[in-house]
Length: 505
Image (cartoon, rainbow, N blue to C red; front, side, top):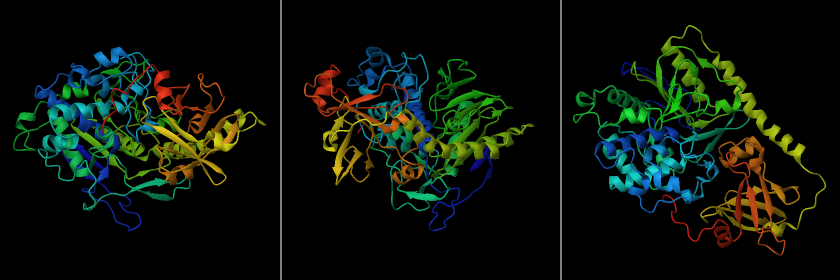
């Protein structure tokens, strides 16, 4: 973790291990996988392209990428890079699927265009394409040439490199708090979701980057001594402007979303993009302070910026624990920087969130059991076997027999399989325990309907054989998404002839 006040690094501290098995401690140059902290780099790259005159913030994406399409004509014709970077398209997130690439036109419309904020990582996949089209190089190369190199960020990369030393390994916590070592995450330059989650960096480099952002926002970029050519970061007023309210009952000036950053005014609650709000009924209120721009969380890290005092609080971790520890630590340190006279009890908050996180898993099992209709018949297991495709045919679930067990995998990858058991009628369950979830390296989803697959016969099926399934993979789509054995039938049912955009590759 690290802290900056008036652009001076005043504190860095290291805890735990970057490699638990080898007992190797981290330092300021240890490279961490940043996940959603990457979004600030993608928006900064777009800001540089805007400053170069290669696009305007108001330019429709369709004018930059003519092949861009969506079934909603308003989104297809009018959506701008600001709409995608500020999560105001109204489209469903479908986070369960972004381990694979598929067309943007399959994202269901949940709210009217620009009506509500709904976090959606796919907007940054659109930004990837814009950056590469206008920058003339890969997303990672654009970031390296226009941000990392000018700021001398020598420990910041967008591709996996096994020759790099001092790299933090990835871990998840079992329900008892012990660790499980995981492979490093897949996103990198050249793969899907790179603009949303694929930057890797260190405390030292990130404090340099956040300092440069605050300098650029203050209007000192021309004389910035950080580089010989001046501060490369531009268009901070657009990036840090609140473009939409996080909640319809609050003004966007009180709590809103900019471009890759949450913007709030204290006193208020923080952690809007973290995991902790799902585990505690009421987040603590940070009482004192001026405007805050920035709180990005996931896998799990946090950063809080105070641009008016040019201060930053950064926490990086290399584990997904039983709560969002980086969020609690970041808020505690922020209160210290603000010298709040009334302190929140973050130890108690952390303990409560851990307990709630653990209890979610047995509670899901109890909930499913209470809703199950007993004594219903199940067909022969081989009836459910097959590959079931989404509407654009780029994502599928495969069910198959393994000896006497029915199992499922995603995208045909049988290295990672899940047993399907009868729930009721033609609905099957793949419910996991917390520890099984950890062994598979999955981001925890504690919504019971996520683990049910409702197999069925489609309306055009005259034989009553199983040819589709419905999966509620996104809370924003309560009726679920239909997957069909025949992709041609799925396309025809949706009124499509061919997928016009296949997503980033």
